[in-house]
Every structure is written in C-alpha cells, then in structure tokens.
Length: 113
Length: 119
Figure 1: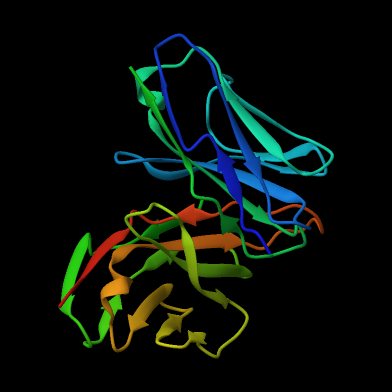
Figure 2: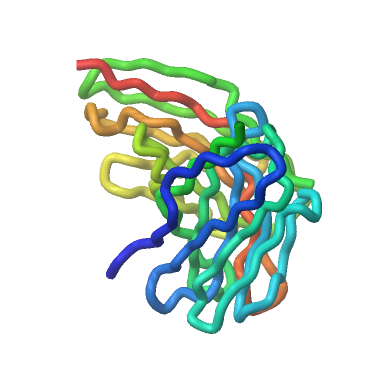
C-alpha cells in the first residue's frame, strides 16, 4: 500500500505571497492532520480533517487554512506569507477511528524569502 | 494542556550498544497514548513504537522497547543492538483519548533527541 504523499516537496516563496500544499493520505484513511516543524518551535499541530470537516485546530493565525476533498485528499493554504512561515510542513493520515496511529508523509519544505 | 519533555538534546553511542532515550509528560488525562517516532536525515517521520496507557505491559518492536511508568509519567525508549540506520531525531509524542468516535486526535511532541550511532 502506498504511503502518504505530499506535493510539492520543496517550495520557495516571497513574503506576501500565498501557497497551497497538498497531501494524499494512505488509501482507506479518512483523517488528515497537518503539523508545522521549525527549529525554534518544534512540531506543532495545525489542524485535522475528517470527512471533509475540520474537527480540530491548533493555535495558528487565520492565514493558515485547509480543506479536505471527498477522496480524503487535503490541502493547506497559507496566505500573506511571513518569513516565520518557513518550515517543514508534515501531513499525517489515519483511518479516523478512535486512537488510530498517524502515519506521516515526507513533508513539504517551505522557504519564505 | 499536555506537555512532553525530552531532557536529552543529543546522544551518541557505538554501533551494537544499547541506548535509552528519556521522555516525561504532564497530563491530567487518565486515558491516552504514547508514541516514539524517528526522523532520519530524509525528514520522513517514522513510527517506532506505540503504547496504550491502559496497558501495563510495555510495548516492544524487535530491537525497540519502552519502559512505561504511568505514575511517574515517564516513557523511555530502549534501542538494543543499535545500528547505523538508527541514527535520527527521536520524538516522543502524546495523544489523549478522544471521546468522539471519528477523527484523529492531535499529537503533542517533545523537542526531540538527536541520536547518532557511530561505527
């Protein structure tokens, strides 16, 4: 079974631009979670989607948003990019049942100049 | 809010040695799950082992085992017969039990321990 895939793998943007990252979960998985990883803040939870609904959200500004499609694929969007948004963005999928283990994709490395 | 603390920023051992990584957590929850993930230089986050808090028996996965002390809120990872491929960042993570039947609960991560296995 194929793992979690994320596109693109690397991205360079400038301040003020917006960016969209994509995540395709493992086949059959219905929950997708997003995490931001930075050297200073470590790994922080952004949001989680299940059945096209955001069910949980971390402490991030409204510039960070996401959505999930009927095939469980998810996108996250960051508008008005700031230098501090430079990070590795990790997506994790799970079956969506209670307490299922989350499996991570390879991440998208975003650099904001 | 839950917190996870990994007190060892870096560790280094020789190949074939045994190494133990420490993790403590703080929570008022009684039902929860604990994980160890590894992140090699490729940055891919890989599940190493999982422990359910309601289980007294410590989880094991081949060369990896945990020492789960619920009262002390401690969850250490032991790697036996370490291999060069074990070189990675290791993250301890906490996930509380979710009342709803659907959707995933968020993971709360520690700051990580950088483990280097030397030949």
